[in-house]
Image 1 (cartoon, rainbow over the protein chains, first blue to last red):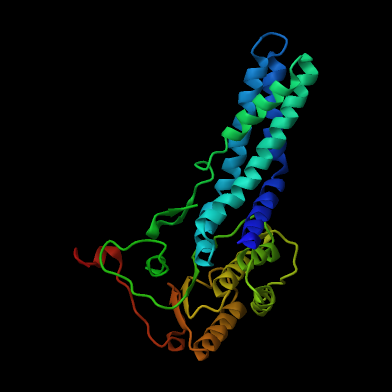
Image 2: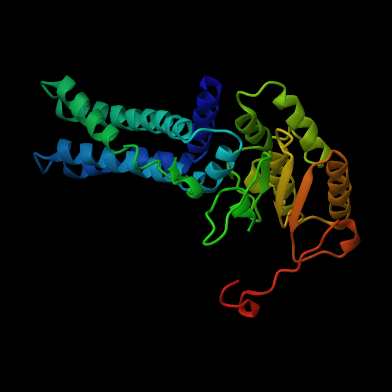
Length: 148
Length: 156
């Protein structure tokens, strides 16, 4: 169980890590939103946080799409759908955490917030909720209505 | 039909009664484009003792270097199909469901495939091959020709 969970997480980490351009764009997206607004709007931090959620969701799509067909083969190879979901969630949440931390760091540097912990917590939570179990869902075995 | 036999889809009518473990090789190799063959083997054999060595031998016997660092997206169509076939063979399933398994193979690989199929049959494994290209029907124990959908009756 643990070996299989680690194998799924490792595979998805490799898949995401090898999409360097996409990852770079996803990391820059919230910074671009924040950068465009921070001199002109009091809501720049909020918009940047929401944009980090867009990025986390985008990473989930990049992870989900290529896995749809392979998941069925993995279930035939003995993988439980829960392991496939959990392995992918570990990687996606780690990616969301990384993007959110980067975004929050730049925001704090930009506005000199008196409550940096609140900004970090807010942006991280916004990023993490963009990767619910529904996002990484892809059919594993339509015959048994299992999903992973 | 093979997807139904592999329990990846449900049949509209009728039932499938399968007792042996099945290995399924789809027509379109369902692989991760950004992983190498070795990384696929590691993923598919995780948590199974002795499977890593078996998988490396299997891949080498099919003509794909198991240590190659080439990503699947950079492999030829034939090499992808061989990797897909190797993944279907992992765990030595008694029933092999192979959908156009030699798509993209050159003639030598095609002949190699049938030599392997004969070896699997000698190991008392059942090999089901769906293909539109069977130049040597004598290699199969039984050949079933499925009618085109337009030629089927309404209840078939």
